[in-house]
Image (cartoon, rainbow, N blue to C red):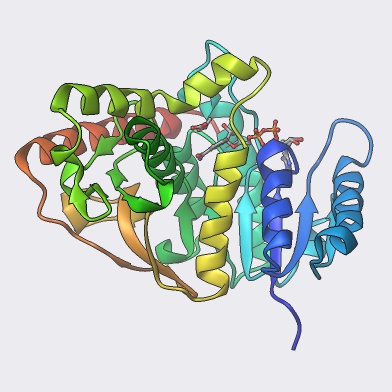
Length: 314
Ligand code: NAI
Ligand code: 2OP
């Protein structure tokens, strides 16, 4: 029995780090594809990673390439190709450039890995995942966006720092788009089973939520030359693992919602069961009034973004 093939398109910071963690967790064999401006960067990174395997003790074959033929028959394809934010840029500033890039990636993957589950990471996320589904024509449940696992991880980190407890004891949920309108769900956030609202006062909790919303920009401001990649890659690896191992993880992902939450046919962050088939079920919660209002605002922002993309000549 051969190992599953995981292809990662875009061998930059997020792509290469995802390859690192997928290989270290022995999730499968990895193909790292990039179309670099100069040199054979994906081949170099793949070889370097392979040479870490005897030390770290993992058996994964990792190849670097610029040829989609090498990705053929992938079980999972992660799309990180595109440009990343620089200081002063919002995720939405990447719209036109990245829509063209992910569209061309989707065309190629459609031809080479028609049965794959696609995980889109490129920004602006909620529009890019929509574009990849449209161009690939894959069933909606096999095209998913990564944002919620990362945003929730940031929230969990800040809560753990505030309370001085283990990150492992914090369970939380954020919904909506991957942007400033993301929606925290205090009713679904607990610390060792204790509702967070019993441990942190509302004003402080709102400050933590605000830092979470701006979590990506905070890292961009510190790095100056690009955006976050360790936590985004870890979040993506968790999704790859859920699919490859058919784990039925209940995690927040950007999933296609039509009747669900009354969204009306857009990708938006919701809690979902992730397994071998991709998004196997969306969990519909009875939202509290404030959560419902915030979620609607977030969906409206996603709709605006998609409308802006639809207005471009792609
Ligand atoms: P990066 O600049 O380090 O890497 C991007 C790579 O894409 C480059 O190596 C580039 O050569 C490659 N690329 C460009 N056009 C390509 C094409 N047509 N085919 C194949 N490869 C191509 O950027 P980084 O930091 O890895 O971020 C990648 C994307 O992920 C950005 O759009 C960023 O905003 C997004 N992102 C999304 C997150 C999320 O939570 N959804 C979190 C972090 C980043
Ligand atoms: C982040 O949230 C840039 O979307 C990326 O770090």
